[in-house]
Amino acid sequence: NAGVTQTPKFRVLKTGQSMTLLCAQDMNHEYMYWYRQDPGMGLRLIHYSVGEGTTAKGEVPDGYNVSRLKKQNFLLGLESAAPSQTSVYFCASTIEGRTQYFGPGTRLLVL
Amino acid sequence: DQQVKQNSPSLSVQEGRISILNCDYTNSMFDYFLWYKKYPAEGPTFLISISSIKDKNEDGRFTVFLNKSAKHLSLHIVPSQPGDSAVYFCAARDFGNEKLTFGTGTRLTIIP
Image (cartoon, rainbow over all chains, first blue to last red; front, side, top):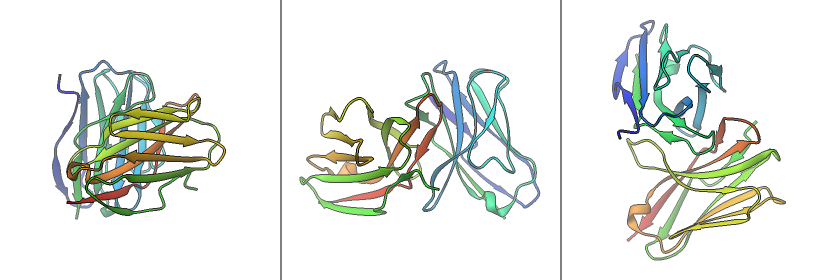
């Protein structure tokens, strides 16, 4: 039981490049979330999903898109990366909408 | 508008003493509160939670207290151990909402 996994662990992009971050969970959780963590800002919600095929915007959705084609996977896409998107990205999941379980994070640097 | 606030960015405590981390919130609709612990280069891990119908929850060395009238949450760790050195986030859930709102975190350092 791996819990929540994230791919890749670290990535460097140039401004304007695109990439997709993958989150996978093997706990059969309905809800999945993408956060970013920046110094002094805590964890801010980007997008979330309450079930397969559904997505919704969080607190800071601009510049990101998401998809939840399979229950166990939640993808976060950056279509045209900007230096302001340099951050650590965390995925989380939960079965009951309360206690969320987090992945190890993806560190992204946009030059 | 920051609905969950952790006003102390850092805290240092001697090993064996009590660590008290504080969290304030403004949204009276929050019905469930959690504490997460985060080590560098790792994801946050769930520590302890409390429902708004309670005022205290205990799990080993960790106790969370909730004062609804003051909209204040605290985490007590006793006795503090070196492995408790980490960043602690408090989080709150809005009633009927699947989302959590996080504080900005407090870095706890346990001094041997």
